[in-house]
Amino acid sequence: MEFRSTRSAEPLVSFKDAVLRCLPPDGGLYIPASVTDMRQFFLYMDEDTSYPELVATVAPSLLQGELNPFSAARVAESAFDFEPELKILDDSLSVLNLYNGPTGVFKDFGIAFLAAIMEELIKNNGRAMILCAARSGGTGASIAHSFYKRKGMTAVILYPAGTVHGLDPALFVPQGGNILPIQIEGNFDDCQQLIRNAIHDRPFAERYSITSANAINVGRLLPQAFYYLYAFVKIKKKLCGDLSFSVPSGNFGNLIAGLYAWKFGMPVNGFIAAMNTNNAFGEYIRGEKFVPRPVVSTISPALDVSNPANYSRLAAFYQESPAVMQNMVFPEVIDDGTTIAAMEQAWKDYGIILDPHGAVAFAAAKRCLGSRDFGGHVVVMATGHPAKYADLVFKVTGQRVEVPENIAALQNEVDPVAVIPPSLDSLQAAIASCC
Ligand SMILES: *Cc1c(COP(=O)(O)O)cnc(C)c1O
Image (cartoon, rainbow, N blue to C red; front, side, top):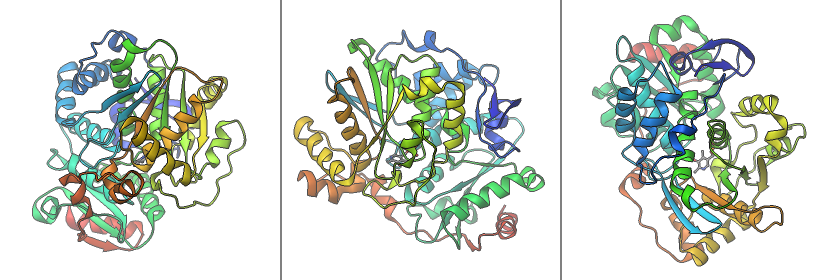
């Protein structure tokens, strides 16, 4: 599989180049230039297939010529000591728990694969430095967990004051580790802009082999298609009609990964783009012009996004097949009150505990299933661990969720290795002095 920029059909680059450069020089984002039909690899897979087995089978055929089956098995084993978990609730509804990774969010799946495959891609000659902007404890901790001790790699985490928690100082560069947290005197957008600038300064980026581990890296996006295939493999024998996925959507990385799973040949009828009140993007999906609106704070904060980072990827998809898109992606808007009611209903009717993000997807799935022209089976993507919302869960359901150690550790304060203003010069100086 080769990759191209969202802005032009040429040039084509390898997976390795797309991952290690992250951003095409023309300012677009990398997307697959053509897509392989993978049906022969997963249609007949046994439903007992483990997640690493599925990844080790699918990834090398997807990345033919760049990843052989032996390397793929090694990558899958070293990335995943956790698995998605499909719970079938009844004939029309399942929940795919994606929160069993080190930091309790589905993003662990993309980050863990990216770290493992990068180590494989550079193993003969190289080193790489990944830059990542973090605005919450989760992403920074997930990066630290997945990249720690990876050979030849340094992970630089940029974040605004007070946002990142739960990094173990023993992993930091001054202590002999390879994780470098740098606090930026600015906001999250400043952090993201700094990363783009650092990558586009080619001489500096090449000196340190800099790439990004944010969701803009296609090496994080692509592996997210694997858990859709996994859900399909687990449920296919029980299906007797349509299959859809309900995806809580903020930056739309998760949903786009689902669209790729469809392009790889997964039989699926549609995707519900479950949004909270920050739903301007839904109008775009319905075919109107996209006009971002100011962000509103909700109880599902990971969905509080006004201008999704993957906009250009979705737009590229639309260009290729507009009719298909409009008949495959169904936007639904779920407000906070409906989210709370869904948490309560999921517990009362099915005995499952959802975090607010999973509840947005659950509510959207229920609404669709209740409408006349929607049928079949819906898989709800439970993207976040309910223990992160233990107080809210208790208030709504009366249930006390046990907080696992890894989730509790995400509260710990972090002392950054450096605090710098949001300028490229300062970032480059900080990197040069530490690495
Ligand atoms: C990031 C996140 C989302 C949104 O995923 P996108 O790929 O940005 O659409 C949903 N739920 C949780 C818990 C998240 O952390």
